[in-house]
Amino acid sequence: MIVSHILGGLGNQMFQYAYGRWLADRWDVPHYLDLREFAGYGLHAYQLDYFPHRAVALPPELESRCPQHLHGARVRIAAKLPDWMRRGLCPVRERPFGFRPAYLKARPNSYLWGYWQSESFFPGHRETILQDFAFPESTLSPRTREVAQAIEKQPSVFLHVRRGDYVTDPQTKAIYLSMGRDYYRAALDDLLQRQPNLHAYLFTNDPEWCRKEFDVGIPLHIVDHNNAATCQEDLYLMSRCQYGVTANSSFSWWGAYLMTNPQRRVYAPAAWTATGRDDSHLPVADWQVLPVEGNAPAAVAG
Image (tube, rainbow, N blue to C red):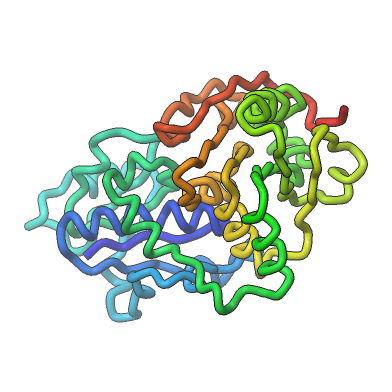
């Protein structure tokens, strides 16, 4: 069996699921989701069950097979043990962050702990993942249906502006870049050469700031009727657009990945952090990668 440790926001949950799904399919074994940490986690709720995925929650009788220690020397020693010496699952921890081919060779009895933020963790599985993350359109709110109809009637691009702790929390701000004016402008300049009659749909966790400061020179619709409990409907709306400009965010990464328009064109930042970390594995191969400057101002006015 494969067990995926699930924690974080919806975008992170989707990456954690996708790698586990690929590995379970490779070995033809069951795929379980370890959701136990959500019991004491107040930042986000578990939301994967909105989708018709095939994994199931880890049953209590299998919990004893999960690694008890996922830090330090113990996890490194446990990962090297042969299967015949192992009582539980082999811990597979993403360290350092990023893709390495060795992760695709993980054993069939593995416990996956990490973010796994790249399509490289589930190669050749796009159609399967699209099916697992298909949107149940019958549950969409009337407002979401209305916005979706407008998106599909005209050439549309989604813009994702990620603010919140990226600009308010000193520790987070020191790590994560803010996508500034030049990034969005470069994407739109390229798109407008291809499609001059473009309408933009903006998704953000700071709509009031964007109303005051965000001006892109084309018709702009700020989508703000959803909240944390219904954020999957924002993903649905992103996926209905023909074009997308993602932020350094797993949420809009998935909004773009779930786009199925054959003419889709996606723009993504070359870097997510100001740490010098190699983020080249993050964009999908056919996305347009744009440079970003360290700690660019979060404002995109003018």
